[in-house]
Image (cartoon, rainbow, N blue to C red; front, side):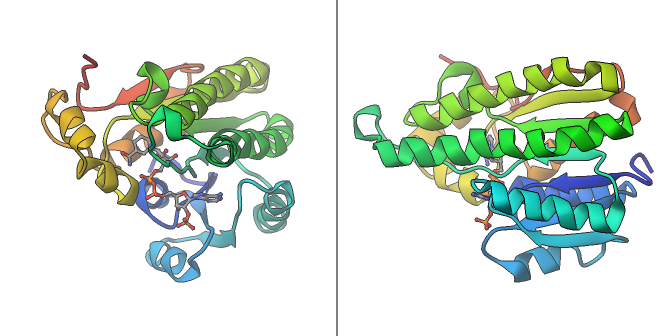
Length: 245
Ligand code: NDP
């Protein structure tokens, strides 16, 4: 088992990619903090077969919520080895129709939320002289997301955030890397797959299918484990060979 004895917090892990990452971490022996925002019962089902876990309610747009989650985790485990910034939202719209409200909501959730969570956990990782930070960005953040300017910019920002923390954490044995998934079958991904744009994205994907949450989780396990000990400040594309044209 690659993560035995490690304590991992995965934001937004009650469903989708976060759930798959939390489940894979647990299979690899980690104690996993599963966070939900709205639905406790979903989170409860996720941890069903976990050896050791903690379920907490987390709203990443609110610093008080982040602080109170960390307090509970420290009380139980007294450490946090792995942080996965996974919680995120999208609200596709033509650029002319993006409202100030939606811009702020996407930025606050996808970017500021990840920043605040990382900023609060970073001193704990420094004290431990160990940490693994993994940001779930998106192919949209690399090439510009059609119909999602706010989302694309937030995900590009997340890549920069990963680079910054790679720099800040290097002398404390903290690595920080990003995963940029293509189209993945989740509630968020399925909404896109059903659209004309989603079909176009799939037709530009060499493997000619959407990815699975497990395929993203496999990369997260690698980046959380000792197998990636000499890798930091990088972005890994899990996108089936998505070509932008
Ligand atoms: P889902 O919509 O299936 O799940 C999103 C998760 O984030 C949910 O657990 C949700 O909680 C949580 N969340 C949303 N907002 C907040 C918030 N303010 N505070 C705390 N938690 C929150 O999305 P995916 O699993 O598809 O996506 C996961 C990540 O992967 C996202 O960052 C997304 O941008 C990224 N991604 C997804 C792709 C895809 O095709 N699916 C492609 C590329 C990147 P709740 O259930 O309570 O709403």
